Amino acid sequence: MFRESAMQSICRDLLAGVNRHLAWPVPGSFFCRMLTATSWSAAARKCAPLLFLAFTTVSAASAQDRGPRVRAVIVQREAVFDSAEARYWAYRIANTLHAETRENVIRRELLIDVGDPYDSVLVAESERNLRALGIFRDVHIDRADTDSGIVVTVRTADAWTTTFGVGVATSGSQSVIDLSLQESNLLGTRTVALLA
Image 1 (cartoon, rainbow, N blue to C red):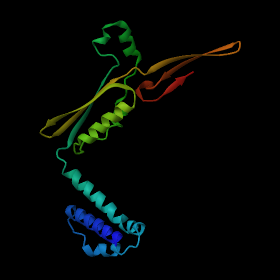
Image 2: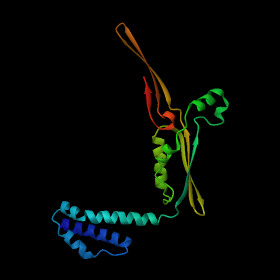
Image 3: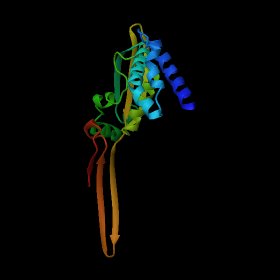
Image 4: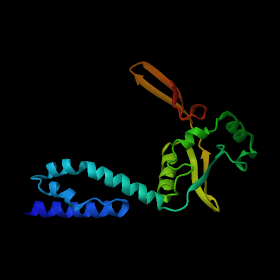
């Protein structure tokens, strides 16, 4: 009896959720066949198509109700060293040698695009995605409200991604010295290159 009442409750909740977002209501008799299931797995197999329909319908309806849409996404990239630090010749040389991260590398990590409803959760996740690449020292995503929608500005500051490595190993009377050079953002493409 516990299984049947739990299944009835699940089906009633599912029906109510679907009917709230559909133009045509799903008849309650549709669930009568599902309520006669003898096991959870059988009920799940019977409910799967309806669960998919409910999920896609509710997702689409809630996306439309989210409010203003993104009108533009502007990407602003900064060099490794900013203008205050680049007063010294060594920092200017480093900025010259370092290739800035390409805009398409930044855009492919963004979970929002032009025309999408603005979602602060997706913006925060996009910031986390960019930071997780490990090639930026600073990432900020800001929004500006306009009459025609929201303008999203993505600001990134590259980090120095070239590392040198030296290793020494000895075995008896022999010594081995290892030198390595690794670039984690080769030519701004987020490609890792290792020379050992």
